Length: 152
Image (tube, rainbow, N blue to C red; front, side):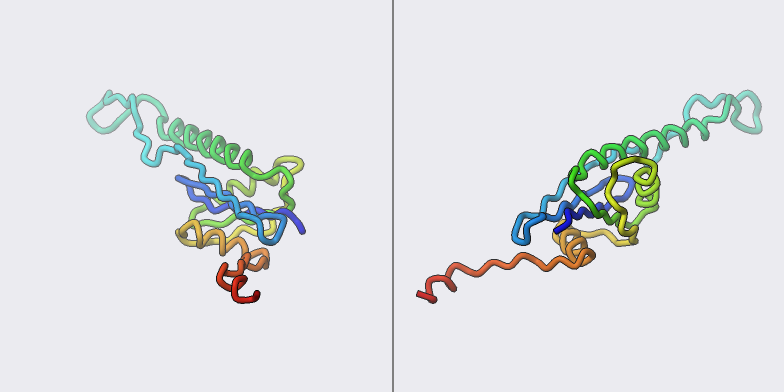
C-alpha cells in the first residue's frame, strides 16, 4: 500500500494528515501555524506635501515581506511530509494551496500531487475522513470488547 498524505491549509494554519501504511494504524495529524501577518501596516510614509504620502513604495515592501513569509510557511509544511509519502492531496479554502503546489513542483524528490481541491473549514476528524475518502481508504474498524466475550 502506498504512503499517502493530505494537507489542509489556509494562510494561518496547515494540518498535515499522514495516512498509515497498515490498514488499522493510527492516522497522524500535525498542526503548523504560519505566523504570517494578515494586516501588515505600511510604515515610514512622510507627508512632504498636503495632497498625499510620499517617501517610497512601501506597498511593494509589504508584498515582498508577505511573499517571504508564505515561502517560509510552505517550506515548514514540506518538512512535515513523511519522507516515504508517494501521493499527496492539497485542500483548503484559500489560494495558499496553489502556492504550495507550485513550490512542490519546483522541487526534486517530492510526492506525486494527486489533486488540489477546494474545501471549507473542517474539524480534525473531518480532515482525516476527507483524506481517507479521497484516497479510497476505508476507516479502521475495531470490534467492541463485549463482542469477544460473547464468542466464547
